[in-house]
Image (tube, rainbow, N blue to C red; front, side):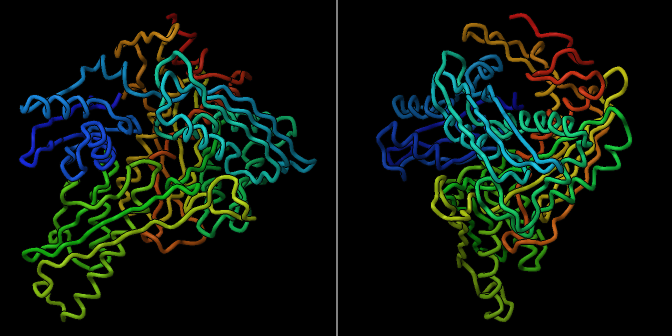
Length: 518
């Protein structure tokens, strides 16, 4: 239920095409789809982004853009299309319901040895991104644990339920919940404290992930675990969970970030199509430009995404823009810096020149024959502790996250806090009732977590032992922030009453006693 419902404005263009203003996660994706629908050359579909009132994956699929464009093109008139709140919640994609079975084992010293998992994702009546979401749930099912023997199967299945698609976490939110609950049971069987069990099995630089990728020197998950230990030890009703999340599409899929810097009238124009959906990518690319050039923000002008002006930076998804478009911005800024030095520091001498940066390192597909394939070029790591009182009411959430170099620490903290609150709603209160494939939704009874229910939020930003060069070492935080929340809360409740919650939203808690009837 993002703040802004789906909307678009379209009108005919002078070249026989159409103009389109939209709020989405990629203007170039919309240009491609609308041009295919109207059978027009892409250059005749002119798309620019308005301010986006939240996305979280829900704007990856087309919603009203094609309606507005088609009617405008056929009638020759300006067209506005906007969904009501009730229509929006009925038609846009939801998080995939998943049924998961996991079996884990460890040796006598409490070191994990093997994982067997089966994941079935309900993608609804249309595929949307069901395949990639299920794939990501599987590739992250082992968590940041040092498993060396795995057998994971994933299935995305069609049903008569509502369509499922991309949603913050992209499948990892679900598989992380199953893994963390399972590992708490394994730790209990071994008689090992859950914090200690994780510390024994954490992946460190030089280890290999279950997919064979070598963990690089920037990994700081062990540091995250240490940062929350005091909070975990402070209460017998503290629950713990951790997670990791990729930055970038990875698995062999072409993935390129782009940025162009243009010198005009004594200013540096920053142009990229990277959609700003609330995560602050506009400020990020401006900050990287200023850091690289040593200039104040007042010397820059940020240009809103526009297919006629800004280079294609890919979709704002997979926590990728800070790393990919951030590094593309740094590359462009280094080119400008070199040219400026050659001009003796005279910016006016570069009037009209453009400097283009592009960043898209290759990754290896699933099933690669390489011994140590590169599934993704970067990961972020996080650990969360949930503390509840004797009644089961949340007292405090304490999180520690390794996002590399935080470009804008206030924005990073905002993402972590917002992700935590979203995760609490997912864990405790949100219930989309869908009997026989027919949604029954009312915003007032859906169960969005309310501001007055939010506990104290404490955030620690930690760093791994090494820093990568790309984008000054920054990695994404958008998705990771909500992934470990639900399992941390579930663990807290199991320590309170001895019951492991196997489905979400959790029942028999301070916030929800039993399932709502359809």
